Amino acid sequence: MEITLTQGLLLALVAFICGIDAHWEVFFVFRPIVTAFLTGIVLGDVALGLQAGAIAELAYLGLTTIGGTVPPNPLVAGMMTVVIAHTTGQSPEAALGLSLPFALLMQWILVFYNTSFAGFLRLLDRDAALGETKKFMNTVMLGTWITAATYALVIFLSAYAMQQPIAAFVSTFPEWLVQGFRVAGGLLPGVGLALLLRSMLNINNLPFLLIGFLMASYMSLNGVLPIAIAAFAIALLVFLKDREAAKLQAAADGGNQDGI
Amino acid sequence: MVSRNKLDAKDLNKLGWLSMISQSGFSFERMQAGGFTAAMIPGFKKIYGDQTEEIAAAMTSNMGFINTEPHMITFLQGLILSLEEAGEERSLIQNLRTGLFGPLAGLGDAIFWFTLLPVSAAIGASFNTQGSVLGPIIFIAIWFLAAISRIWFGKLGYRLGINSLSVLKESGAAITKAAGILGVMVIGGLIPTYVSLRFPEDLTLFGTVPVQGIFDTILNNILPLGFVFLVYFFLKVKKVSVVKVILGVIVASVLLALLGIL
Image (cartoon, rainbow over all chains, first blue to last red; front, side):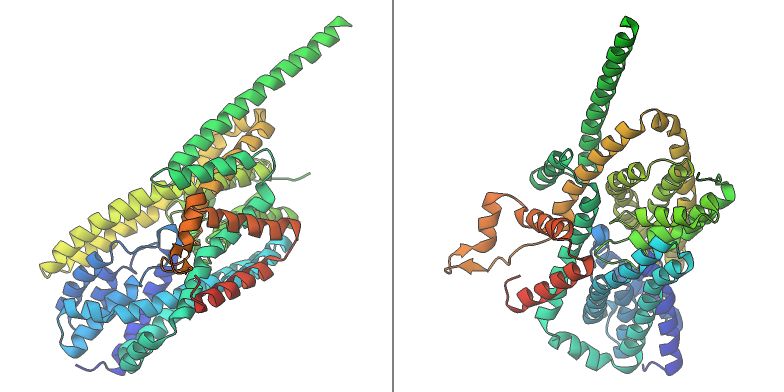
């Protein structure tokens, strides 16, 4: 079953809207169970959309953006599973596997975007310092429009125009370039953290930086909450000690005045 | 003399809805910083009116690295707005922001991504396999309710801030220092989680000694720690611009990947 131009454009529209949500992660309509369903509606095969949605959603349950990582893309996987099954007559299970190149392509694009969107921060810092709220908001929203438009373009090309060439392109793309951006993606948060330290770190709290690091490194903790509680405990101790010292100081000063 | 207006229920509702854009412009360098700040702009404008320097200062102080679970973002924003409204020291607000976003992320991930997502997916999928459109419909309905819960979270954060004000007034400086300890210690804990720098397993010296293994025997995650300190050194001591640092990181990453070293 061929995809018509109208269907291609409608799929692009679905990808655009769900793409906005993929960027924001608010309504979760970017998850495969929804995108596959919507694709099924556009292609006139709701039953296929439901079948594909179920297996794609379960397959992609573990693939989330926790910790700021970028997984193979669920939105694209959901849509392309239905598209491939519809156009080739393959089973949804087989189509799920065949949708992987497209999910990977979107993943790479988003890793590249997450790296290059750091360019916006230069503009944002400047606008923030000047209190240019409108410009600031517009620049922030650029990320949404670019991302959503990219989802629409990728889906349009993958579904309507260039399915074969894209699959071939994905398999021949230089791995080192993808790896390079993957590595950069792992290092850039370090730049962000260092930026925070630039304004927060001093000789008094340096010890705690090291303690927090050692805790996360050597203890198998679930998340950063235990460290935050330990940090709170230490901070509370320091705070109470400071308060005691301040009280003693005040008493000593008061005592001197009485003496006179 | 800085004058401040109070926020009302309408402002907090606005915050709840606008906070939905908070991940816009997400980048690895500072993650949610841009969108997080943008969603609070109406709040800052209500508080500070046309005192642009104050709005600018509030915005700038929120541009630091932040990454928390999307539903929890609004709680933190409500808290920050309540502290801005009360005129608290920005160093205190910043330290609290940095100290709290990590734990809130853990809490939000546990509630939404590790519990609600598998449960809603299982419910939806079971309807799907029976050929019923209730599958996606129920899934969408569940997550719509989760989405608007952030309006409530925002108000909760705001109230929490307001209720803490008397304590903050009494011991501001001590609390700022304590919050600084909280923030910096959490940052230390985030380094192993967020920063990855590992040599590939098959990279060896003289064909036998794994390079990564050498570093692992010295100290776990010593490379991410070293990297952060290195960047800190360039930023603070050598005063290199952030843009140069980032470009340097990207170029170095691609080069090392090309050479097969990373």
